[in-house]
Image (cartoon, rainbow, N blue to C red; front, side, top):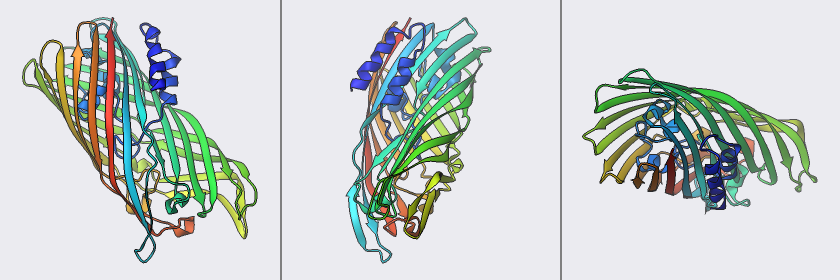
Length: 427
């Protein structure tokens, strides 16, 4: 909560300028992988969570920068928005030997955290808009007991991500609008596991990379609209620090540089908006993410770690994830000029194969149920939401040759609780 309070200070600066304070807020708050399949995050505002992520056509919402940049043309004048979504994941696992006998069971160490978002939009004239967003598109954190059987695969994993997205949008006429933007993407990665089952290791590094996005909206009439958003993949070439802690095998700590790549996948989102009248509308959304870019997690060491009888030159693991869809349905209804209620449902396909699964992301398909409300007047908007994510289990194949101390494992009883709050100020 202290991090969120500190973020509020940036309101004083963002009326005219989007400052580095917002970036510090995003990077200082842990992001929990629970919102979308893989390690994607789409909890970019309280209203977005309330509508299951189907929030591509919102009126006068600065968070459109995240959900659909072409819709920042729906913002009137100048607006700044700040959002924070609290996510609390829970889950259990059971590990088995080659005979199918249970050899270990436990649960994750709960890491509740905030997914923050900061947005600024300015209307330049009747045709042109500019905006900038700072939010997390990807992120995750998971932890298990360090002396468990599954710790040979991973006992602590964290990916902190932040995207800075300067955006330009143009409204060509009453039917067409489009936007294009750059993305400055940050990744901070930390992985810990017990190599060979007994050597605690830590790999930690960070990287910056560039990407881009484009979007377009087309209004058939005053009640029906479609939109399309593309976000490019972002490839990080990371230099990290590796440390292998002393054990009965190594005898002393081992320090070296490590090198690897993390590819954040490209995606397409398509949405449809229907207004029944001036008070009620419904959105349908589908997002296709090319998770096949995550084909391996390979990390090489400059100085291989010595063990009796040989060396460990790095950490190599095939993933071979498949591409997948996320489907969302959101409803928004104005109770009055000042109050609105929202509801949503989303379904994420599982993209992680048995042979490429691990305890970095030990979860399967997900179903999100959410409700929210919004207060709004001419100058400000306040929204709050509650959500529940029902998360399927995942079967995980152990790799004895890579040092895993189990043959197979299964995560189960997975779920997450979500609470979101957003505040927007219009100038």
